[in-house]
Length: 255
Image 1: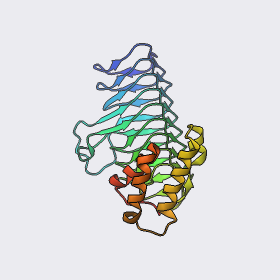
Image 2: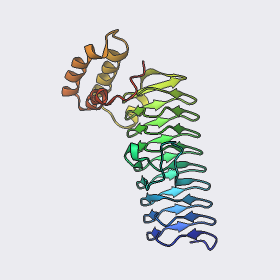
Image 3: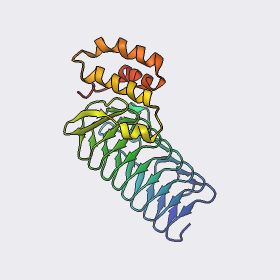
Image 4: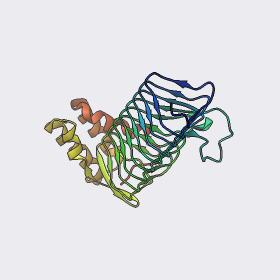
């Protein structure tokens, strides 16, 4: 620990943790093995940081959220392992109305000035480019990519392997595998490059494209195409997340 950093009594610091200068670590913070804090970082509140994370200067994690319904009770931030949190990132604690916890999984990259609001749940292997902003209660599934300067409305759900272009405004839910862009964001096909990068078989990519076409190009309602997608999901395991997504829509589907 650098001599110019402050660690309050009660904080739990794991082995091999590196704490640079001018950091503040509150009394209820837990930091896992091998995590690196560069400098000028605030970790406060009931915050748990996992193993081997890298947190860059001027980030603030665990502080009071910006929700007007927050009533100062103990709520939490839980961050997994092997995340890279770049300069100026803000991650706020949860609210009682949202499950009390903001959660970030493993192996995520949060680029400069990313904001993760109260009660967000982020999966694994996600990328948030510079100035990406998530409102409260947003859920982002594994391997999603959010472009720079993009804002996601509170309570939206972003499916796995989604790619959202920069400077977008997302106000509805985006199903797995879909590319979206614009303000307000609209669907632009499936994320074929991302699927190939993650070794999806050709036949599965064709099935995903077929499911996408049923939703967005058939001219039929969601209730009409659900049975067909269910049949696809029984044959292709990759379609199951697409079908299951319709059961948990919060804000309606982007169209």
